Length: 213
Length: 222
Image (tube, rainbow over all chains, first blue to last red; front, side, top):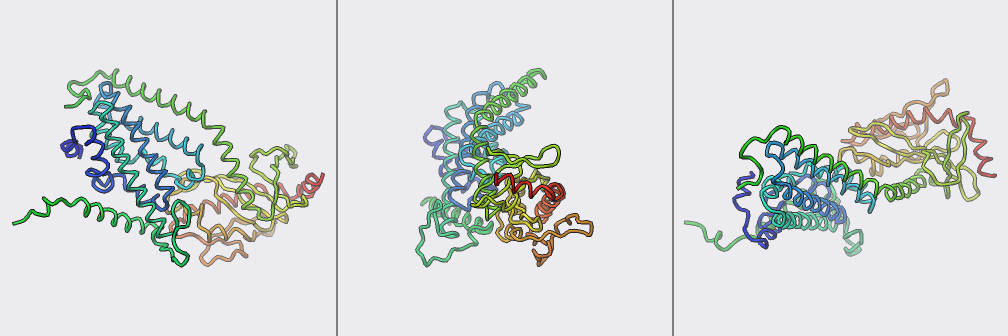
C-alpha cells in the first residue's frame, strides 16, 4: 500500500495540500479510518470534534516524525511512530476533557482509539517519514482537512435527517418526522454510501467518460 | 529515496537510545499536559457530578457530602467535595435520599456510577453512569439507554430472611417492583456489571446507614 501511495504523491506544495482534500481524500478515495467515521458521525458536534482531534494528531505527529526522520532507525520506525502518535492522542484526550467534558463523554473510547487510526500511521509511513517537515505538514493539513470535511458532512446530514437539527439547533420545519435510522449505526453506512457516490460522481473526468471501443 | 537509515544496520545501542529517548520526551510531555489540565478537569468533573446527584435524587434541591467516621457514624460536610456519598435535602432541609458512587469492572475497564437510595432504603431513585469505556454502540448504551436508566427510578430492593439485600436480577420483561432490571440487547456484559456494582455497593452501605439516618436528619436541621 505504501508503494502505491508513494507513486502518486504530487510534487508541489499546493498540489500536496489539495490531494488530501479531494483526489486522495482519506475517506472518499483511500477509505482509511472508517471505524470512527461511521461510529461518531451521528451529530455534527461529535463529528467536528472527532475530525479536528484526528487532524491535529495527524499534523503534530507528521511534524515530529518528519523532523526525526534521519534519527529514527528503520528497524524501530513503526514503534517510534506509534509512540509519537499515542503521545499526541493522550494529550489531545486530556485537552478535550478540560475544554468540553460533555463532548469528551459523548465520544467516549473513540478519542483514545485515534491511536489505532490507520490513516495516521499510513501517512507517517508513506509520507512524513520520507519528506521534510514543510511537505509533511502540507500533506497532513490536506489529509486532515479532507477527513474533517467528510466527517462534518456526514455528521451534519445524519443529525439533520435523524434529529431535525444542526449543531443542536432545530432547523427542520415543525411537521418533519425524524428518520431515527440515520442516528443508528446503519444510518452511518447509508450516509457514507451516499457521500462516496456523490464524490465519485463529482470527480468524473471527461477523458474517462470517453474511454471505450 | 528514503531518509530513514536503511542502508546499514544501526548498532543496538542506537536503536535503544532512540526509542528510550522518544519515550522519555513523550512521558514528560504527557505529565506536563496532565498537570496543566488537572485543575480544570477536576472542576468540570465536579459540575458533572453535581448534575448526576440531582438526576438520581429528583426530589433534592441541595445536597451535602457525607463522610463516614471511623466509629461508623456519618459526618455532614459543608464544603462541596467528592466523598462519594451525598445526602440530598429538600427546600425544608429534610433528607430526601442518599446518592452513592460506586465503581467496578465493566467489560474492559472500570465503570463508575452513582445511584440514589430513598430514606427508607427500600428502593432506588435513579442511576447515572459517571465514567465508562464500554464498547461503543454495544456496552456503552448503559450510559444513555433511556429504558435501562428508567428501570432504576423505582427499583424495589429485595431482602432475604436475615434482612440482607439480595443481588439485583436481570430478567426479560423485568418487573421493577420485584427488584428486576431489563437487559439491553448487545450490552449483556455491561448491564450485568452495573447490576453487580450496585448490588455490592448496597451490601456495603445499607447496613452502614441503618442506624445513621435519624442522626443525619438532626445534623442537617442544626
